[in-house]
Image (cartoon, rainbow, N blue to C red; front, top):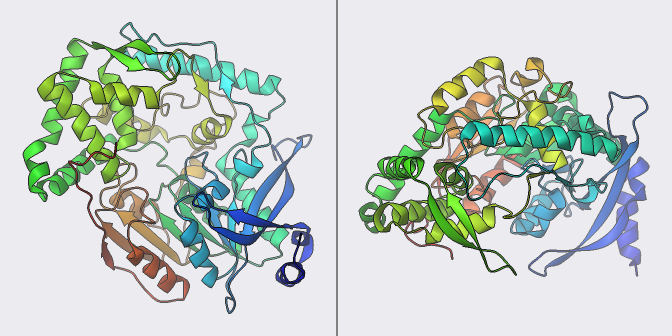
Amino acid sequence: MRSGLFVIVSALALTGAAQAEDPIIFTSHAGESVEAYQGAFQAPENRNDPDSRMIEIGYVRFPALEGASGSPIVYLAGGPGGSGTGTARRQRFDLFMQMRRHGDVIAFDQRGTGLSSNDLPLCISSVAVSETEPTTDAAYANAYREAALECRAFWHEQGVAIEGYTTQQSVQDISDLRAHLGAEKVTLWGISYGTHLAMAALKSIPEEIDRAILASAEGLDQTVKLPSQTESYIERLQQAVNAQPAAADAYPDIAGMMRRVHARLEAEPVMIEVAVRDSGARPYLLQRRDLQQMTSGLIADPGSAAIALAMYTELDQAGSANIAAALIGRFYDLGEPISLSPMSTAMDMASGITDARLVQVEAEAQNALLGAYLNFPMPQLNRLWDGLDLGDGFRTAPQGDTPILLLSGTLDGRTYPGSQRAALAGMSDVDWVIVENAGHNLYMTTPDVHTVMHAFMEGSSVDGERIVAPLPDLTDLPF
């Protein structure tokens, strides 16, 4: 039953179409509950098609605390494919609650995710990659290209205007959300792909953006990361390892170890047994590509990077693959053909890569530790679908004077401090805060991160501040 006070607060807080919100009790995965409001608005699935069907874009609004007077704060999840409401339910729930000190906080589900999923179907293609026979990088990429072409046709058959799932169309959703809420401006708060979306908004609708908090930023021409920057990250990881005596003894030369293991698997892949839920075990041919692809995900944060280090060490010193086998079962759907998610596939393909950057990536990948797998299946799917790529104009960096707080972790293996700052070089009012020892998911690494966020929201300068987050024991595996 709705409390009378709850409804009164809702009416006072909203104007215009946003009064259609419904009061809800929002409960985190940890069991914490708070009064909130769930709302939605309609948007064309493909704004470039005048006959496009309408889809629903949903969100949850957490009302501002008493005394807050700032613009609504719109959380933009990473991925692409992450859910704002899903993030609010997990470990960042407390931070969502804290941010209400500055204004309403909106857990926004971007088109194709969460409350805005509109029942988009996963595409399970007919294309399979052998699990027991060697597969070259070229053949592996071609399999994904074949699957992506098949999936585009599948989504069209299902009535999905897949061409509408681009960052630029999501920018217009943010504009529609602002109007729906009756707000003059909104503050953007994002991480990873969410910062990519925020930068596109800073270019297209700067007059609607009050300020922005961006962590682990991905620039508009940085969907595909430079392999040379990943090499530099490995050097920083080695420095962190060297600061811990036990880790330094266990991993004296990370890069050398990785190259040895890759060379051995390239020459002779190893047949392993991988446990499969409810199906016993399956044989799997472990190849160099598998390690590169899994490590690309593991290096996001130092805690998970420790798993990669242990995996390589086991293969290098013991010749066994227990850790790799456990990870294969988590990373891959064994026995299944290639499947693709509509939102994440289309968003990355549409953002694309400039020709000049592609040449650089391909050249660097030839000898890089992770090859061309950090962003797989990009750039392998680059410009595969006609009419989707947003063009080099989209990929130019934003310019302007919107206040921005940029938070960068020194041990982020997915986006890198130097490239993050470069992505915002055209913005004149950037407070850049480095978080030592933090990885890609840095918001909850230390309360000091929250302190600078609040200071920035209150108008204080925090540019140049350096936060030291605790470094996990890099020899301690979380499983």
